[in-house]
Image 1 (tube, rainbow, N blue to C red):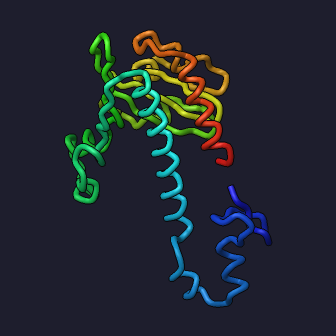
Image 2: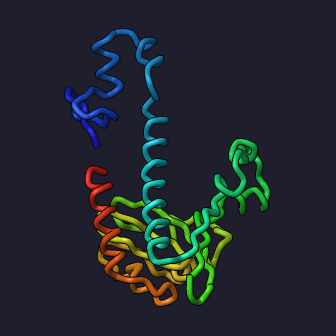
Length: 198
């Protein structure tokens, strides 16, 4: 992350100033407020982009291994519904919001899987990171980090297993997917190059 050249706090620009230092130097917060995204909005967009890069990596990995890959998440299946569901509290709305990112189908066996992709710079994903009452018990959580691509099922998370930097639950070890470990290593290299500065 970029640091403020004056105080060392978080800033969105390399060799730039944080919000506070910028305002002090310019003595006019109105000018600042009209320019670009505010820090909260910038952070939200930044995290969304990291997540989409991780999703694209996994999508391309499975496509390269001849899987059928379908984007399944709410934003793809029911475009525009995000705004309509704001503030709606019902079981159906909750399940729509929690739809996994992909449905993938094995090319040979025709088996079908729900896949949820998460980027974690620290390489950790535990049951605490999963929404309480997550409705897709048969989904697989694939975690892309700076160094590895790991995977556990939601059921395994609920049994107490975790994805950590030290765990050995690599995506290539999942027998149900029958993946080529060399291809996964190539995609890990992509992840390293894309997320090196994150």
